[in-house]
Image 1 (cartoon, rainbow, N blue to C red):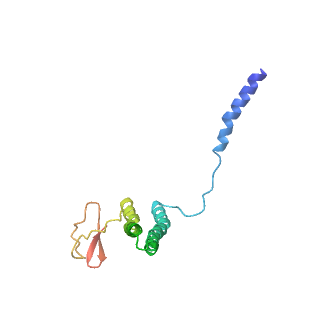
Image 2 (cartoon, one colour):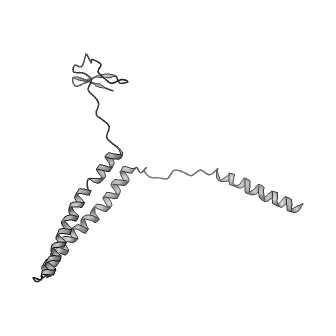
Image 3 (cartoon, helix red, strand yellow):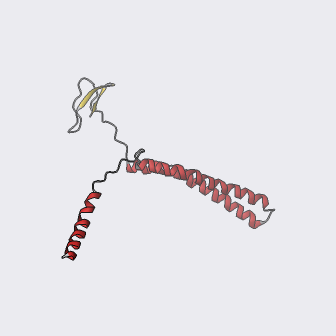
Length: 145
């Protein structure tokens, strides 16, 4: 009998206590909402100076190799390869600088410009697509909206 009461009490406890968890409400976290555009721009703003510093370091290293080569063909060849590496690094860095803009335009294309629907403002000959109406008053043309 006692064992049965203990088991029922333990079972009731384990079934009722999890319900209290659903009563918790967490407050909103402070700060701005971060969208994918801001994340891409933030990552790029962090990586860009590091990448440029590495590419410029290649040129400094190449200059050091040229100065210390003393006419040795092997060291001059290594210095030339370092210059080529630095040039390729800078070219990649400058090409990569357009990557956030490309990704943002692919993920979030800009809205199309409004279509002009007539040549004369007062007439507005009704050449707007279905579901759009002509709005008169912007310059001399009416605008589909």
